[in-house]
View 1 (spheres, rainbow, N blue to C red):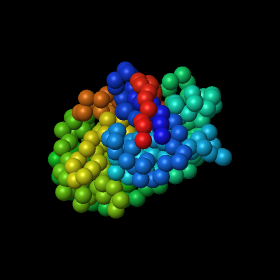
View 2 (view 1 turned 120 degrees about the horizontal axis):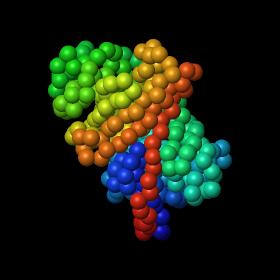
View 3 (view 1 turned 30 degrees about the vertical axis):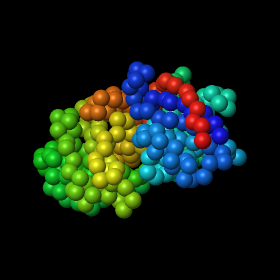
View 4 (view 1 turned 60 degrees about the vertical axis):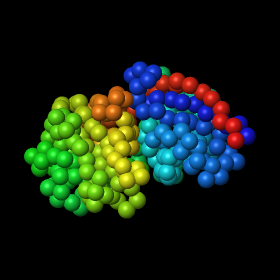
Length: 277
């Protein structure tokens, strides 16, 4: 069995920037164990598999090296880029995901997704505990930290300065205690200067803290945080992420006056190949 795939970088300003993604062009005939094993083989933050859909441009399944995800931002944008070429859809694509149908539109190689309406709940840990979890002081935190879910629930923690974002050094045991929703352990931190945001995203994998270079689902959840905290609308923000791991990413966030959340970024294809099983 030969399985063609493509490698793309999402939220990229240069071919070797952004967040890498592997997209398998045809996932038909593969069982879940094989899908998971292929994602582990590439060991990227996510790998996607394109499947037929009766109701959308394509059905898409998203796998990390260890589990399947209902939704993630950079896999959505990167896979839409591949679906457009494979299926000749034009610049409007709808991807059928476990989290529901996700509309995606393009202007050239810049893709924009519309996130699901957000849900939110309290952080459940005091500021002192969250500050210590991040290796920071209470003075570095802003209120309110919230769990936000626009398709993938994450703990969103606002910080007082870019310097605090750069100083953050999460503690594993504290992350497990205060940043777990029972399924995953993760935290998105950000600070804002005008319309510019600096962000970092941490998650636990095999009892190690991993930092993601560019997280579209967390960007969407930042939009949900703005809505949950009553921010003035509309909002249009530019988010830099990945600085600390040497993979600069630039994400765009728009929250419309009606509360619609959109996330955008550039997609660059850098290679193609075939896996033989």
